[in-house]
Amino acid sequence: MKSPKFLLLTIALALPLSALAAESAKHEHDAATQVQLELNAGKKWSTDAPLRQAMTHIRKAVATALPAAHGGKLTPAQYDAFGNEVTAQITYIVENCKLDPQADAQLHVVVGGIMSGIDVASGKQHDQERALGVVAIAQSLNSYGKYFDHANWKSIKLPH
Image: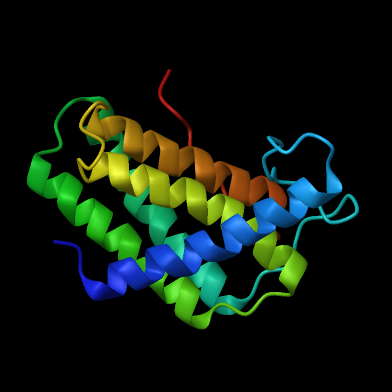
């Protein structure tokens, strides 16, 4: 059973995303249009210290887990621990990060990708290999680095 904190986090993240998607649909003729990451008038979005701290922790966890996951060497318990670690950092972001509304909306796209990756890595998507969740989180982190101003951020090299 999922913890109440995890359920609250999921709801907290899902509601703004669904509201943002609904708002976007109002402005687009095609209601199927999905929210996509974009720059802030050609510049990266501002970040705050809690966001940078948590994303740095997530990046470190992914950089550590990715080679083992790609090599088929992570155990189910290690995937679970990885998922819990990343979830704790997302919880920290939700509780502490304070961005302007437009930057926050963009961050929700990144966090949504990370949360989807957590589900796969944690074995909640039984039709997908758990290693693909680690890769999905790495891809979301690389998008974060492309769209958010985080000094010295380094993309994660993805397996081929």
